[in-house]
Amino acid sequence: MQGNTIRTVSYKDVSLLGVTSWVLLALAMFVWIAKPARGEPQRIYFVAATPPQSGSWSYYGAALYSLGSNRKLALVRQLFTVNNTPPRAFLSSPTPNPFTDFADDLHGHIYVASDRGLFVIHENDPTREDYVPLSNFDDLLCWGAVAGNAVPAAAQFCVPNKVVRVLARPADKTRVDAGSWSAFAFLQYGGENGGPFPMQPPKAEIAGTDLVMPLSSRPEVVLAKLPPRFAVEPSRRQLVWILASTDGYLVVWILPADMFGGTADSANPNHAEPLHALALNRGSGQWNEIELGTTVTSNIRAPVRIFGDWLVTTVMHWHPGPPATPGIENERGGYADQPLPDVRIEYQSQFLDLYIPGKIALQNLNDGRKFDLDTGQEDSEIIAIRSDGEMLYRVNDSIYSAEIVGSQITDPKLIVKDAGVPEVHWAFWAPGAGGKD
Image 1 (cartoon, rainbow, N blue to C red):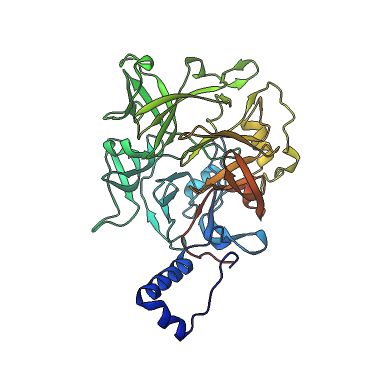
Image 2 (cartoon, helix red, strand yellow):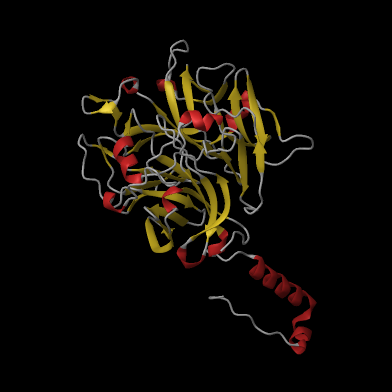
């Protein structure tokens, strides 16, 4: 391996080393062998899934991939399948089991859900198959991953009058049991997926100075205390989007009153730009106001994600148009009747009147560093950042690795180019080899 030299040790060398030195040498050799080499291709995994869209009866599949040979995706497991059947036939069919929602407890478990069950991806053992059938999954009232403190890693969802919990790991007797409203105080949410198929962020409300969830339901749990200047009469409430929620940070955006109702078009421009968000450092208890250079309309969600200390935002500008978006000619199009969605037409319909220059803003919530990743392509997103600065990002049908060094992104390398890449919105590094090349 580059950068390492293995020296052959003779019996005579051993006698000179002494017992203590030999033990230290053996331990060092073990660490060298056991320590995963940074960037080994077989250790990177990708989750590909496209959420269903309102007004459409097309459902797309979900899959787990590893990094295969020749810069291609290697299928580890097909999680859910594609369905393009009209609603009546779909509802009467016993076979479709389409992807509906995604959660990540940010403690090593990813939850990929359908209306009939939930796949748990274990990041320390990604090839393990773990499917939990469910009879009543519903992400409408509330849905999310929880973990931390004394709360075990799990996914929770709400049905009328109760919360259901799916544990990341089997308990002594059960895997699915009663959850609790109080566990949502440990909500783990990594932010909005990229691409033209946005998902629903968790919602909360302001009651006095309390930030509470779930939305318009009782009982409720207090997520945090807001600074007094953001107080709202408890009887009135004010809607809040949770942009990110981790062990270290809580980032929220208070929706302005004029964002309610209407549609996003030139005649009724319900939009906000830039976003004035609030970020809580859970360690210090300090709230900070941050400005996010992006636009939210009545059609879309805030394109914000968090990776450790890094908050990343897809830059978008209000541009009644439509504008000539860079890179649109490189996006997949013409797939209306195919298993893969039409990326180009979805950007045109979902992101109406927005200009997306292909720029992603990064800011470090711990040390204040700020800089941009400029791809020049509309369909771009960061899908992972490791604590040591290694980063993965997607541009159309390609995935690149790079390094964050200081306030720069360095050493970009193409690692994947594949037709299935536009559906990849999440990635992680596993501790050992896996998948099928």
